[in-house]
Structure formats: structure tokens, C-alpha cells
Image (cartoon, rainbow over all chains, first blue to last red):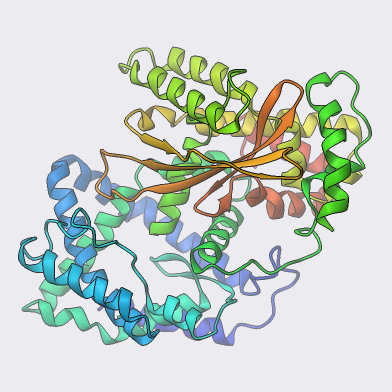
Length: 268
Length: 204
């Protein structure tokens, strides 16, 4: 797998990299390296991944793209079953195993997802989730080459799976496996088409925007509270409470002032 | 990648599918009614009238937000050191940024299905409410639903939205570190200038 050396190099760099000067997010001590990888990913995306994904989108009809997505989704269910087993979650592990069993047989080798409508929930877990359930909750931000936003914890899990490449047994030759890896990436990228413009429009600093949104979502998906810094403790009323009254903004200022008083005292 | 997709997909929904007309008093009704109106409007898009549809949706949605409160939330403690004039400038520029961002992609959501949960979570003595919704895009090969929470507060004119969480990520506080970096580098006025440059297409 061509990704492997890149990922291993990234992980090594992650462990070796020293302290950055004043990171803009306390959970991003590797910011200089992450930014470099981000720039690389961005350039690779514009030069290769996006055009390829566009071509893929225009030559393949939606049912085919759904089937391709389902196929790789089914493989991810295999990993998910293993991860859930490792984190001692038999119920979910069984759920994932049943999904794989149904989709691989009645679902024609995973091309059709019949498990979801049949009531088997799609609750994928990764090795990163397993590490988190073992106690590795907080993890710093890490941008993986080609794969994008991650954390040191999730990247480690990903690196381990990538290094073992268990799914290569499915394919007859290394060439077929590489095609499959590429198709998987293209399929994922195709789903993101058009959204990169949103990021370009929305963000003052696309790197920071991606990082902060990713960390918020990842924390939420693991059910862990984000680390507190003094700024996060401020309720909206505490932020606005000291605002000088605004003349001319009749609609908001009056009720806001009223709402602010009880809440500021209640929140602390 | 998948997570980013979710975030971005729903970022774009932010202006697309939102809130209350002066209708009922319940924040849920208001979220649901406005979502419905927005989707109905988006469905009239035929590729030629996109500009008009956008204007209509903006007219529907923008009054339901309190952009000043949003901007304050995005700035955090820095809001308190800004002068009233700076606060006004920031709110105007932030509003422009958000509207510009999300209105440019809203038509891709015309087939979205929005399921607004019937009960809101109230806090702060009933002055604040959080309304949950699940959004599905039928015409995509990734058929997962995305959870979107609208955070509202009560004003004399009815409920207003000032925060939106998509899969746990706030579309507002996600700006806090970026704003903070600008303010540390060049002060509040520096941030206002960045936002202005961004909004006039000169880049940040």
C-alpha cells in the first residue's frame, strides 16, 4: 500500500516534532507540521483528487456510486466489528457482524446495503474509538497525508490498520488492491464535491476552521467534553452582559439585558 | 473525511433551513415552519431563477437570526474589549460572511428532508431553547442523517437563533480561534479589516 510509508513518516514526525511557538489552539501543538501537511493535501487535492472525483461523478450514474460506497462501507463494518470487540462492546460488535453477514450475502458482496433498512444500525467505530474507550480521551490534532484531519490517537489507529492492511486478502493481486484503495478514496472525495467552496467562502483561515470544526465534532462523537479554557467557560450572557447598551438596536437589546441577569448568576 | 463532509454539508444548511416567522410562541413551531417555507421556496428553483430564489430564502431566514449575539459568541472574551462601533462593524461583516457563504450553495439542498423534533430543551428560565433536527439528503450516495441543533433565545419579537450546532460543531464558535488569531496579530480593527477583505473577495 503506497500510503503506508507516508503515514508512518507522518506519525514519526508527529512524535518527533518539538513544541510549536504559540499554537492558536492548545490542542494543536504540531501546528507547523500540520499546516505543511494541510498545504500538501490541499495542493494534491486541487491537482489530482478533485479532478478525478469530478470525472468519476460525471461518468458513473448515482446507483453505481451508491454501490461503490456501500461496498467500502461494508468493509468498514468489518473493522468496526473488530474495534467494538476490542472495546468490549459485544452488542455493537454483534450488530456490525450481522451487518457484514447480511450485506455480504443478500446484499451482493456489499454492493447493496440491506442491513440498515432491516434495522441494523450503522454505528461504525474505528480503532481510534477503541483507544478512546480505553481511556485515551484527549488527543491532539493531526493532519494525515492524503487522508486529512485526524488526531494523534485516531491517526495511530488508522496507521495500525493501514500497516496490517487486512483487506488486501480480498483482492487477487497487489495491483487490484491498489485500484481498490484508489477507488475508495475517489468515492469519498466525490461525496465532498462542491463543499470545498463552502470552506473557502466560510473560513478566514481554512486550516484553523477545519481543525476546530473537526475537533468539536470528534469530541462530540466520542461523548467527551472539550477541554475547558477560560474563554469557553463564558456563557453568552457573560460575554454580552458587559456590553454597553446599544442605542438603535431595539429588537435585541432590551430582552437580552433581561435574560442576561438571571442566567449569568445561574451559570456560574 | 466523513466527518468533514457532514460538517460542511450542514454548514450549508445553516442559512438554508431555519427558523421562525412570528407564528406560534414555540421555538419548535418556528423552526419547523421556516424550514418548510425554505424548502418550498428552494423547490421552485429551476436553474434559471436561482438568484431570485436565493433572495427569497435570505429574506425568509435572515430576520430569524440575531447576528449581533452570534458575533459576540464567535468572539468570546474579545467581544468585551470591542467598542460599540467596532461591535456593530463586526456584526455587519460577520453577517455578510455567513450569508454569502451559505446562500451560494443552498440550492443543492432543495431535496433535503428535515425532521424537526417536537420538543425543545429549555434553559435559562425558559429564555433559551435548543431545537433538534435531523437532516437527510436523498440524492446522495451517503444516506446518513446529520443532526443539527438550533440554539434560540427569546426576544420581545419572538425567538431568534444565535447558534447552530452541526454534529456537535458550532458554526459560530468554530470562528473563535481564527478571530482570536487576527485580534492578537492586529487588534479588533485588524479583524474587521480581514472580514471586509474576505467579503469583498480579496481573500483573508
